[in-house]
Figure 1 (cartoon, one colour):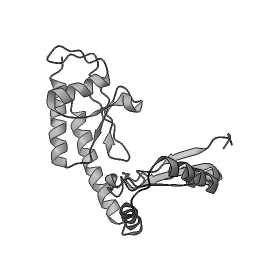
Figure 2: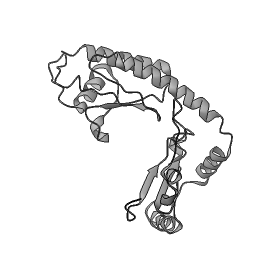
Figure 3: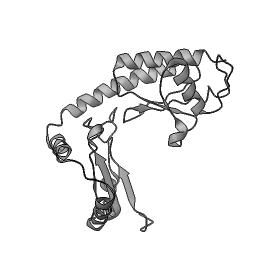
Figure 4: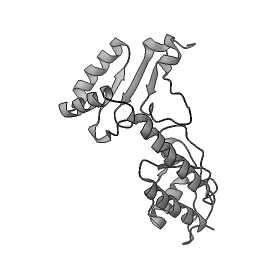
Length: 207
């Protein structure tokens, strides 16, 4: 509010995937004075599991939306009519399943956090939303693999997990979050238990 030349872009993609009483709020809702210079972006990919449909949308001041539409119409193709209809059905249809899905994600989150915190050298905080955890691997940096290779970065840790136990994670540097790595828990508990067990074994094998 003190800087009227600054606009706000807010990504609300995970608004329905939050846990533990965390209350979602978007910036224009928190401060109505920002309404006329806020672009709110959302989509159907996460809450409605429509990742492959490639449907997103934005709300903002009319002049900005008009400019966005002019640029996009010349730079990308539009989503097909079937995907648009599916998104309309998702947004206008029953929403009760969203809480059920969030509860399922919360169960997976709690399990994954517990499993990863049992791994030597890892420290996994509990996220309040989305379906990723970002464990710190600071305790693994400087350790050596069974083959004698020293892990110098979180990217080295990610490569080690993939090569040694076949678990794919994304190194934190890609998100400006070193030394951490990202694990998605958007899969079954059985798969997550197997993957986390492999991570624990890989961490225990370091010297």
